[in-house]
Length: 391
Length: 152
Image (cartoon, rainbow over all chains, first blue to last red; front, side):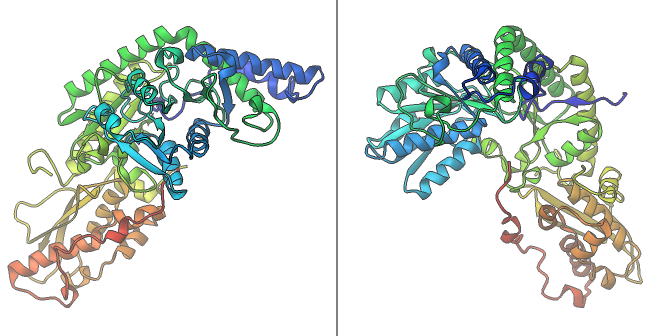
């Protein structure tokens, strides 16, 4: 097979779409004014941000004034949790989240623990769903915020956010969701969901890196996060990333327009890929829910081999994927998400995430399946463990 | 920018000495799949105590496979005593270096070689100075995984 470049890591980041880039370019060179300036160029820039705010709001069913631009999704997560926690210390210092959150949440929890806060981590079942009974049982009079991700970045499990938000509301507790992976991949309606805070990022939806947003429900009191000028309704000071915000807006608009077919196409390709891999390669296991799952997410364990070695072979064939293997992470610890859903550690080492996106074709997947077959066979031949010898 | 140098990639993609012998003179394993790396070395030793052939099987990442390949190359043709002097540092130098984070966890060679020779010594009633105090079942050093927090 002729070598081709196949990018299958859309869960990590996406390319900027041409329409998005075209919309951004003039805001670097021509319409570069500071949105806070009162003359025409400044006001044009301010108008462009207003439009982008409307576009992002429309993607999640929010009002434009409920959207606050940030530098990244991680920043939005930090802001939502830290400022809610600090503002409600009189009520208490207890926070609830889950064991499968992104590090932007987990490490924010670690930080708050150093300030004397207590964090409870709710477990998940083998498909990655939050245990709702465990969540309810963890709620205390001093709990101030619950943060549960909308969809998991590694295994794609979509959490029952509406139910969780209802539980939080019933107990008078703020609810935040990290929707970085969900955005542009699901129909999101914040009003229907009943969330107070929701984090987003542009670069997962074919927008630029370096721009994110936090949805703050109208009426929800979240203190200022960066002090300084009056930008973002005085809540997040600093001259706006003008071109980045314009790009985020355009990407959100495209995502909304294409949502139905985007989901349909990704789901179709994903199901085809899973089916083919299961058919053509032995000793394979799919991780995460098969029903409530991000349309482009595949997470598979190839038993008896190690994921980094597999990643290297695929990379040589031009294929980009990621792995839950400890050996490919700088910390050498295996994926906390696969650990939480109960995948045995030796199998986590052999797990990869394939994430499909708008530019993925069936030919890309066929090429990848062939490469996988060959690489897995080669590594199993080298491996000191096998289906016959066992672990 | 590649993560590994050309020599490492060469040994990883075309590893030498992969396999096992039907009747090895010595066989040893080090590491475990839980830790992410497990290396098995088998050796054939002649009447003059020379290792005439060696093979390996490794579950592990690219650098673990490459270092297994190089290590088996290094001991073939050596006497048992000489092979006992092979250190992980020597394997590492032969590979032309590895990313710092990979060094501790994926170079299992010297322990695996010693384990195979220990097995040979047990079976053939031999003793070697290089095996003094060696325990093939010693647990992996916990410290090896104490590496700074991940970056992304």
